[in-house]
Image 1: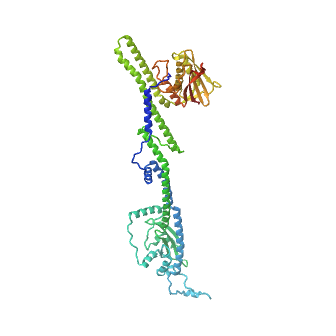
Image 2: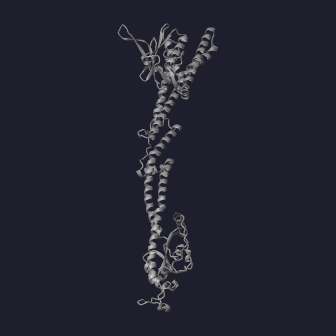
Image 3: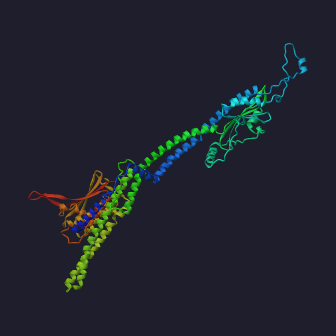
Length: 600
């Protein structure tokens, strides 16, 4: 049944006190008296300290740095630069070797004073011809003289940082510029000390970077020059270059060219770079890249931290606030407002704020509902207890009968209250569990009108339904729950019938108003007091002077409003104006309830 209910004054006082507690708890706690603003340095330290422990910040920084590290590592490998540098160095050594080999061949062979004369050749000479000695000589007759070669080799090699070795036609070592420098300088190289831990690590990294598919360089004995492939090819008359890596991971470029005189091979000249010659140039480039990479890494870390501060910081604050809401640390927790941001963080902040406000509103509604229920249940229980306690003291059957009527009345009242309270308490959960479907209001209202006319619920008041529109096929459909919408209309019709005089009619009108469907229920009753037009939708409010106290629970209109609000609609009450009275003042022709729902 639909009711218009009057709440108790004590209940209003309790509600006001409850609201006052909520409002007071929403205020920010005062700061401690000893609080002082932190310096900007301390604030910055706290900011970066907090960011460093943020998982999202670590991921942002790590991913950004990973790309930079991969780029720097690929550049540090310097494959193309190193290959081009090695090729250029090999070509330079070949040219240098040909020049030095030519100089050695021109000035470093043995010149003897012996003259070899072939008598038979002298007899074959023609007039005008001269004898130049025997043309048939062996290369071994003119070996390279180390004493003559040493000054020339020292002069040509000194400006360069290369090592020169001269081998005889059999592959034996004649001269080594390294030994020549030691003899001339009268000092011997210091014995190599065992490499330390850091040096071993450097050697390992350098070997990994430089080795690739290059062969390992080994120092061969003085009699085993043919063990170098380039020397063996040079002794066959071909110039050759080789690239190797020594045990320290240093790149060694070596070339060998034949020493020719009169198209005869007198030996081979081998030139090789120092161990750190090419590595120094590559290392210099790597250091330059590392400097640039360090600056880029610092800039990227700063930018990543700034980016993380715009993401991780707000998300962390929102998460902390949500955690405080869950734990109910305060009576009311305010979610940080980032709605001015036009991004996902702003949308998340707005959604959390709306959700929290809805949650607090629901909590407050539940608290108020519990207080109202306790108050409404207490009245019939108090009356029932008094009647039960008085019943044994009744002296006659008349008194006992009146007490039994009071007990029966209170029991029925409790039954109605419990039923309506149960319906109201599970209403939200039911609306959330069920899916909204299209509801044909024309068919629904026709069915409800027929049921109301058949039952009439003890009232001799008929219901008349009218649908306004251009045709019967006009769309009068909404999205919702047909059972709950039918409950609202049934409550309104029953309420209108209960306030109407027998023989009158209740008029139900359904029409489309722009993008909404409007349902109007009119009766010819006494109308509603002006001060009660809004209050009739409050829980447990009843304004039925023509009925006895306790006949209605006062939850009908409150449940109806709750259902309409859940469907995104509106419901309100007003009085229908009637004819003017003798004094010219307007009269009330009856009550009118209006429901508007979004059209499908």
